[in-house]
Image (tube, rainbow, N blue to C red; front, top):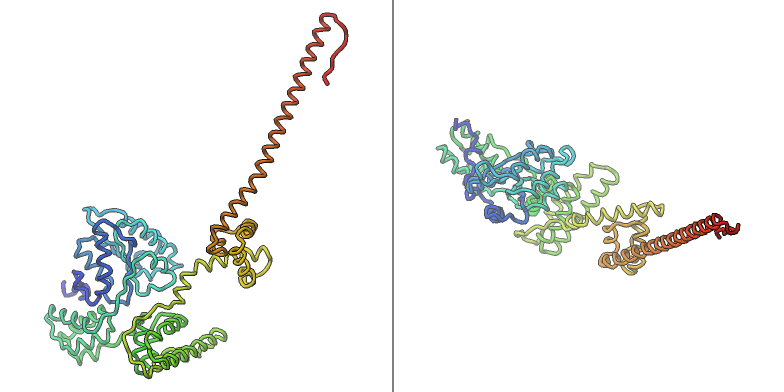
Amino acid sequence: MSQRIPWVIKYRPKRIADVANQDQAKEKFIPWLRQWLQGRPPEKKAALFYGPAGVGKTSLVEAAAHEYGLELIEMNASDFRRKEDIERIAKVAATQMSLFGRRKIILLDEVDGISGTADRGGLDAILELIKITKHPIVMTANDPWDQKLRPLREASLMIPFNRLSERYVVQVLKRICAAESIECEDAALKYIAQRCEGDLRSAINDLQAIAEGYGKVTLDIVRNLVVSRDRQYTPWEMLRNLFMSKYAWQAKRAVTHTDLDYETILQWINENIPNQYTDPEDVWRAFESLARADMYLGRIKRTLSWDLLSYVFDLAGPGVALARKKSKFRWAKYSFPQKIMLLAKTKEMREVRETLADAIAKRIHTSRTTVKREVLPYLMIIFRERPDYAARIAIGYNLTDNMIKYLAGPLYSRVKEHINMLLLRMEKPATASTRVETRATQIQTKSEEASTSKARRATRRSSRRRRKGGGTQTTLPL
């Protein structure tokens, strides 16, 4: 029965120290987990493991659960997609203790597999789960940079995982061969490690298939059976492979084997050319090639001539990689594109601007583009130079607080003061007139009551005189 167990499960790490070549991830994850175990939840209650497949993201969570005696609640993207699924299983697990009082750790595997449309409500349910959880939540993703995952990134501790180096893969394969008493050649294990490209799971599967089929692992057998994996590179892997390329085909493979869209690829390369190249001429040649790639991409968008796409890859890949003539390759820390980060930070502000332009365009009967180009700049000057006059505009156009903040900037508080003063003035005249009308009504009522009382007294006196026989004069009420 034990022989039928896949080796990736049989030899899965039981301790955190057994997880190979992920020291950086452990340094961030272990202190975060220990805060939970000490009864003081960290500021970010969830951790997001991200990196290529087969590098130990799930294994590290399982090893931590085994080492610290935690009950592991694991859900895959195929198990939870809708809001109802998450509330039925994960929400109950996150808010309650186990039957025997053990602490839990909740693993949501492959969260990037949740669709923003087909699995409506799934991401919102995860965010709500993070807010109310009493246990640590760990999520895994191969590509966390999708726009739909932005709220999860902001609510989680981001922990990167790197592809395993060839040396660590060979060490794990040797250990498995020794445990299974299998004859293996070092050259064969190294060949498997090279072809797996850092994916330890696929390397172990290849080793098991060859060992069970032939009883030994030799280089000749491995060469005939093992083929290279067609991997999708992360942005950092794409840059590393691009700048390390010595041949044109290597550079082109780097830019074509990634999930990034064409514009984002250019942004990543544009941001990191100065980080990698030190010679000014090399930097100039690289930017010149990248600029031509951007020109071709713009022409594709205008004319839909997708046959030009190969030129984009040629210029962005080999054109940039082979621009290096004098700069020596060095280990550089690559940066996330600042333009993308700026767009993410200003997304809310841009949404407010669009709403404001739409509201004003309807009032002055023009287009939103015209409002943004010709009206909003002047409104911003008014709001920042004349808060008193800006308050009248804000009341007249019924602007929201976010719109006023966008227009007034640092003078928002002064504009709000003037708005409150104007609103009080608008209420006072109405209150005073109400009081005057009430007083007049009271005076008129008292006058009518006095006249009626006087007439009644005169009538009674006249009646008494007639009964006594004294005169016939009658006093009429005036």
